[in-house]
Image 1 (cartoon, rainbow, N blue to C red):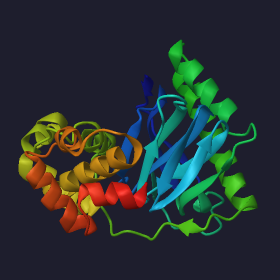
Image 2 (cartoon, one colour):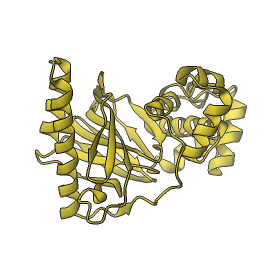
Image 3 (cartoon, rainbow, N blue to C red):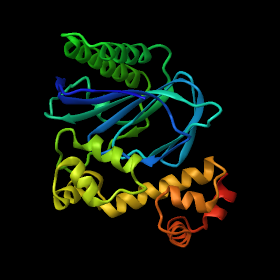
Image 4 (tube, rainbow, N blue to C red):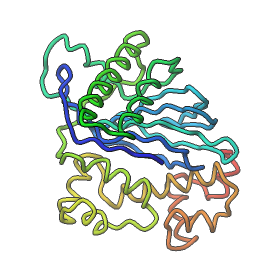
Length: 282
């Protein structure tokens, strides 16, 4: 995986855009269901491979040249089989509306929570240039990166304008945010759900446990414990559907203390045992 982080924000129309990072990676077999904070957007482009993405419970095929965007409140999970692993470019942006200017040409971008289709050579060249620019940085790389990021947003806005997305963003309540912390928090739940504790997360973002709990509640509408349970259950569901691991192995990989605890929690959430869920849903 290659990851290049950004530290320079810019304005575009009535938006303040704080780019977080751009990545290129070969996806793991299971990417558990997760959501983004109230101001977070991800642009996903599949360069090669074949898999699936599940958006709010609906599964879509992902093949080379698939482009999709996931914004606030969109629950998404990915499956990338070992025999056809998906290589994905992923750009993470923090975008917030800073004024209510009428006629803002980029309002459609910030108001769009989900779009999916074929890229057809529109976004991929910009993502590729963004990676290449930051792979071998020069003194003016921050300026070139900002130019490419603006072109990306403009291109996506034009795509949306030609094909109005069906899932708008519902305006959330103002959130307590601290610049740069949301992707760290999301990655912690995404990658460390097996052993993550509130104190671990607080140390990671250099806040107190109380401040961390408040930040999570205001940006995700859940407590730390609820968010962690959701991440573990989502991982378990994906393992059940996309691997042949035993229920005992899945229980351990998802971070449950015992198979009995896992089975009871899974039944509370889904109304089925893990084995029943696998048999019905596969």
